[in-house]
Image 1: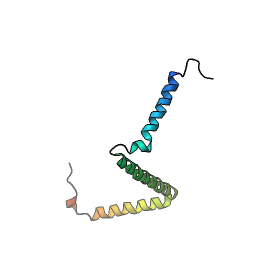
Image 2: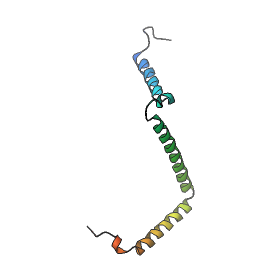
Image 3: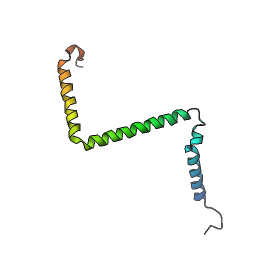
Image 4: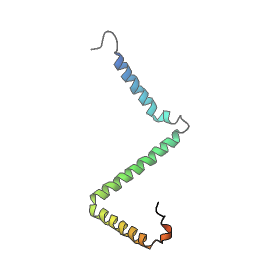
Length: 94
């Protein structure tokens, strides 16, 4: 049943905020700005990179032994190259 005095102020504000959010996020409005195409491309690339990172992290978590083995190989390699590095490349102590 509707209010005989008309819509409440909260209802009007809520509907106005929904309409504003829709107009801001619509594809049509996005391309009206000078950088709209840049933001669209950036969001696509960022979304793909995020999805790839999440997939890689999920794989590393599922294959724990393989991840730890890779970490061990990297640690041994860092130790090997650290031992072979001439001391001239190492900075003096502060």
